[in-house]
Image (spheres, rainbow, N blue to C red):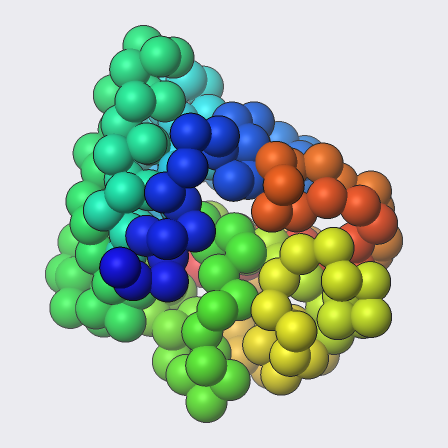
Length: 198
């Protein structure tokens, strides 16, 4: 069984059923009711939340087990999300563009591919649309409350500003917060929020 299928192959939701707090905080910067793409959304907590708030949501994850759990969560919340099992490395094959593109804790990407994946997310965002990235900074490795144990997988303000040199940066903030998102993310965390108007 694949690593991600193994991780999600349990009754409980690894990262909980509630959306990432940062998504709720910055929701007002998204295009209201817009067509929204959530990449690598795991068990669906963020895509289901956005669908509940009136967005037209498509979401992907590499793990078929995670996607099945996401479908159950959508049914539980009585919302519709277009779920698809898809490898994040194939998103550059998509030709559709979205009003909002969301990437939350996608820090399993090998360091040498981070820039190309994040640029692919930008390409999927319509002109005037919103790209939202949320994740960990390198300090997270010492905290050990979630994410990979490798600083090279993490983001910094300077790194994201350099990758996204085009468009209008609305938010680029590093901070510490105590998060409680299932067993996967729990405790004091070194976080970064990045919002770009493409």
